[in-house]
Length: 453
Ligand SMILES: Cc1ncc(COP(=O)(O)O)c(C=O)c1O
Image 1 (cartoon, rainbow, N blue to C red):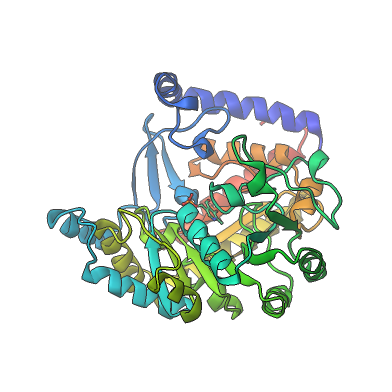
Image 2 (image 1 turned 120 degrees about the vertical axis):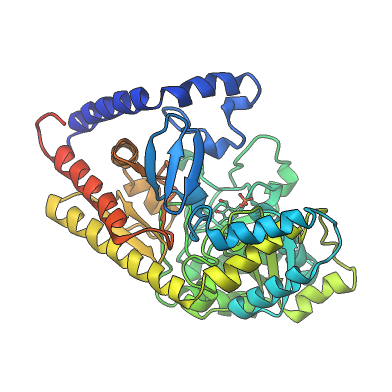
């Protein structure tokens, strides 16, 4: 790609976005007076400025300037059920009318736990309020069960914002160290070095590296991983990788956690467990599981979860099993996301991948389409990305950002940054999917031509 052409188009697209989103810009100024960077979470702080959203319905969202978009961002991968889904709205409204919080168990939680247990093939479930809490609880259970403080994680994976997992999330390539023994790189100031020192980092898709790391670090008793990496675009496991991880961790007596916060209830009813048939010791869930309300859940084997029953492990939270969340999750999991819904997400995913791949091929873009079911993206990489290091080597941020600007300027609300992907919902029509593909084609045509956009 010609970098000058990319830069020229970026300036045009940035100017267009700025003129379309003046109220967002003004709101940002107001928000900055009371919130750092003007946003509730730093992940919402995006260049050129955050787009403030007013409301959503089905596949559509509106920003505060009244621009309408088809939503492929879907709340960082939560809204596979579409916005304001009537069944879920009805369930939440009914629950709200009966009292929003008791901190006492309710019947609905039993139904949700039963359904999650069925989907993810693990017998016991506890609730929390976010993915961060779910992975925190899972790691605590793993440490208690193994009797070891050491944790192994995958380089380039995000598991939430508690101390143990804020290591080598998006390390600067200059600081990564050798592949055979990656450095532990903190993702934030304020993480005690003692926590960082307990973490061993290994590359994804490399069972030999995991075997070597466990042999070299006998103090490791827990492994946490995203079984499909979804925080550097989409990186699927190589055939046999998940099975090998299962075998190696079992042989070393290491508790295996699948972080299915993003894959759970999106790439199949039972996430990776269902799609790949590999069952870990613990699964962490959040995001789509709650139907658009804040939820977390940890699922585990009888033996590991018995530590909670016996009070060896403390698993608590004022809002765990909150009635609004449980009502939304119940409606989502037992009524809305049924077999027909997953068949539709599968079909929609294939349509998106085929359409985008065709454009990559026809225009000779250094990119490929990759994904499964509701999750997918165009990887702007000249070579296949198999782990974080190949992502940093091959991924073209400039092209990715330009494609994002094209989408945002042409009625497609899309996640910013190369680390994310699109999330499809059951509300998307084929015409809306084709619109995404058509905008992508316009981007491809402009970026490969020499004329003006
Ligand atoms: C794989 C994964 N795990 C955990 C989390 C943390 O979830 P939450 O933001 O709900 O705390 C995220 C958030 O994006 C995630 O992508």
